[in-house]
Structure formats: C-alpha cells, structure tokens
Length: 184
Image (cartoon, rainbow, N blue to C red):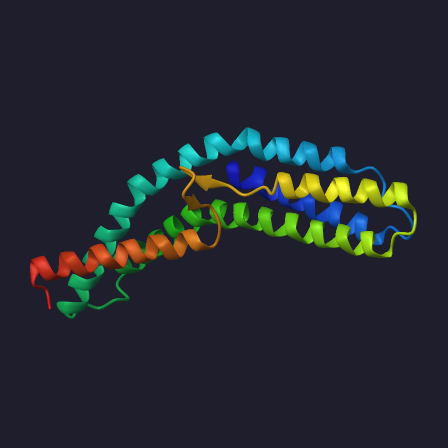
C-alpha cells in the first residue's frame, strides 16, 4: 500500500514539473500543490518507516538463511534447477523486490523534487517581471526547505542506497556464518 502512495505522489510530482516546464510566460501559483504533496509525504513517512524497519528486521535474517541454504546446496553439488530450488529462488526475488521497491520510490521523490527545483531555476533565469521572479524564488526556497527525503531513524536513507547497505550487511554476516560452520 505504501508503494502505491509513493507511486502516486511520484507521478503527481512528475506532472507538476511537466506543467511548470510547459508554461511559456508565467508559472501559475502551484506552490500549494507542492505543499499538498509534501504534506502527504509527511503523513505517510512515520508509518512507512516503521513498516520498513519491521520488514527489514524480519526479512534480513530470512535472506541470510536462504543464501546459506543456497551455499550449502552448491557445496553439496545439488542441481540448482530442481523445483524446490526454483521456488526458493523466485520467493527470494519476490522478497527482495517487495522489500526495496518502496525505498527506491521514496528516493525517486527526492530526485523529482530536485528536478522541479531545476525547472524553477530555469524559469527564474529567463524571468523579466520582478514580482514573478520573487514568487519563483519563494517557490524554490519552499522546495529546498521541504525536499521530500525520507530517512529511517534520521540515519539510513530510504532510497537506492538501502539495497546496497542491506546487501553489504547480508554478505558480511554470510562470511561470518561460513567461517563458523567451515562449509568451504
């Protein structure tokens, strides 16, 4: 569900940027639309973070166990294309996609907000009317003040770096497990 909300906010932010880029003369007063989108992100931020932390807490050990089973099967020379292994692999892929898709879409929000800011800067450069230039500067300041970045516990960013951090964690623990069990 959070994925769908993030997808919707992402789509609306993209459309807002497209509308602003298509404006020939003056950018309409769309700051309230960005405010609604930023308020929506703030509303879903806390539940998203808690849900994602719970998902990570329960799925990371499962992923470590699944990779350990895969290593044991490889060492024993078992056929990797048996139905059981294929189902486990598909389940592994499903868990990874469902675990990281919301984080990637949350990261796209920040990127789209930066694109919106760049579009506003481009309009500001060509603007001749001083009053409208002040409005554009205010809009840019508002987008800078509310960048739509989501972080777990104010440390771990919810963006494309999260899968890399989790992969690093899984590999580190997998190395420790392999050393303790003397598989190889």
